[in-house]
Amino acid sequence: MTIRSSKKTTETRLVSPDTRDEDREENTNILRPKRLDEYVGQSHLRQYLGVTIESARIRSAPIEHVLLYGPPGLGKTTLAHIIAREMDAHLRQTSGPALEKPADLVSVLTSLQTGDVLFIDEMHRLKPHLEEILYSAMEDRCIDIMIGSGAGATSIRMDLSPFTLVGATTKLSRLSNPLRDRFGHILKLDLYETKDLERIVERTFRLLGCDGVGADIHQLVASRSRGTPRITNRYAKILRDYATVGSDIRDARVVSDIFEKIGIDERGLDVLDRKFLAALSRHFGGRAVGLSTLAAHTGEEEWTLEDVVEPYLLKLALIERTPRGRRITHAWEQVVREYSE
Image (tube, rainbow, N blue to C red; front, side):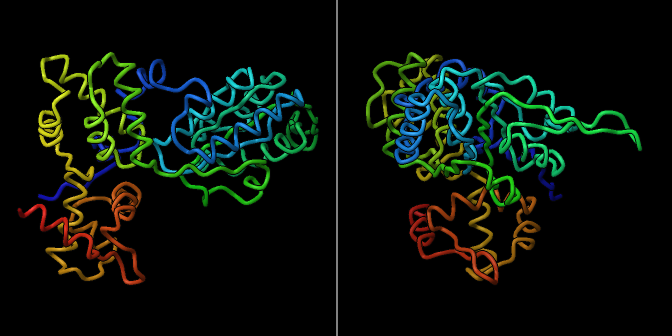
């Protein structure tokens, strides 16, 4: 019997960049960088923000509104916390799904003090009528509040304290043009280079108390992390647990065996990735295949394949998207040969 997947699929994958329950406490309290000079990777973005923040400090003014976009797990929330800390400002955090009614958003906006940073995660899930409230709040620092109802209703304009809105989204195209245009800074976060992930692994092991782990282990973990710091930290904590019960994670052979046990290969591919690639190469003979056909064949949801599986396979050039569907590339032939050896 074929079991259809749901959001549970992404939550149970070790390679999923989405936040899992075990990611929250330690990432927030221990592993998250506190200052911009502690933040690893995204060098151009980091330098740009450094100039912007320093300029705002000199002018004694809040920085312009910032929109951060890119795949999950790359540090958008961390950057929001850093911006607030660098500006010596209070951070108020919420998310698009948490704001259901106009009163929810109005309550948040009217509670802000001068210089506060409001962080809204998953902005692409903000309801359209709430976006309209943000237009005047971001541009004119005021909101219109309706008093009463029916023919006797009146509109009162309420001024807001100067604040900075930091928005984060994984789907920039789902934000309306008027909302995007009101951000002074629109910054993209890209998947990390392996050398930057190695630095993150080294820092994470140090903060977790795993001494004596060498550069070869840092590289081994980083190369399997799919360009995503959240996954890097997750692997480091798994290895920390193995070390706690007696495994020698200073030995590269031991660490490789651990990754084999949890189903992660040298490229960071897991069972679902390999099932997707096998469907394209073995069952469809390398032909271009539509997403709906692949979903039916693998027993996964279309959105799971498109949003969770394909981005990393495209980055590795193992697949390509064509007008006729998804197709395996020549790079996959080398992977097949390695698996068969």
